[in-house]
Amino acid sequence: MTAPAKDTGAVSAAEAEPEPSSSSGAAAPDRLGALLATVFVGEPPVGDGVDDVYRRADLIRRGRLRRVVAGGAVTALLVAAVGYALTAAVIPGTNHPGVAAPAPGPTPVVDPLLGAVASVIGPRGLRALPREPARGEGWRQYSVVDSRSGRPRGLIEVSAYAAPDGLCFPVRADADACAKPLRGGDDLEYTRYTDDRDADWQVHEAIARRLSDGRVIAVMATGERGTGDAAAGRPPLTAAETAGLAVDVRVSSAFDEGERCNGPDPACPVLKVPVPVGR
Image (cartoon, rainbow, N blue to C red):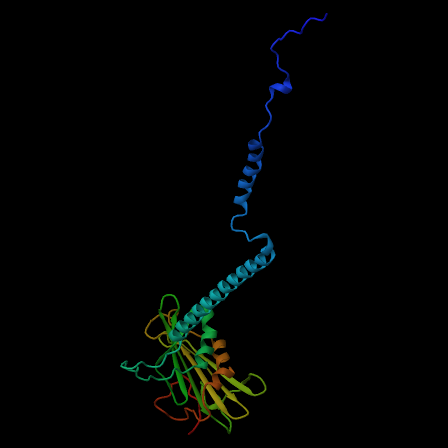
């Protein structure tokens, strides 16, 4: 006869673990859904997703285009405003009502002869300025100063004459003789003169004649008067520079065809060696 089994009170593992309840099994998907829900906030429904993506891209593109157009318009307005301001500053505008118009002044005269003189003396630190009265019918005159110190360095006088029938170039030692001129090309002949015996009136002079029409140009450079010093009273042009200006086409072109100092004319320069031409 078999003995009855004793109840030890032990519980099997299968009996010890409780059955998972239906409520805990449903909680995990709910939590996952809640987490994923925040990701798709503001997104279009799945059914219209593709169309909405293209619509939003189109809106973004249009917004960028509007910003680019607006920026271009602002830039164009700024350029127009700056251009108007610069134009108004450089070019005198129309007078506004109630504002008095400025009195008309003389039109500035461009002097090619001054440019020719400046090109010669400028590299040596000298500057030529019109000396009043600066010009007349057939003559011009310029004061020369040191560019840095402003110290006077003398005077350059240029005069034009007409000698269509020829010219007897003067000889200082003999009033009845004619000097043999040098040639300055096929159409030019010239002579030059230097007088530095007087410390207060040192002179370099050149007389040039154009063979084709008899136009004569005389250039005289004198040192500053009253220095009492030969070095301080040296002419602002050398003898060669004086002759170079006399044959320079810019110098002869600076005078109109009718301008001439055939004289004697009190307004024309008093040359150390006068040009022997008649009226």
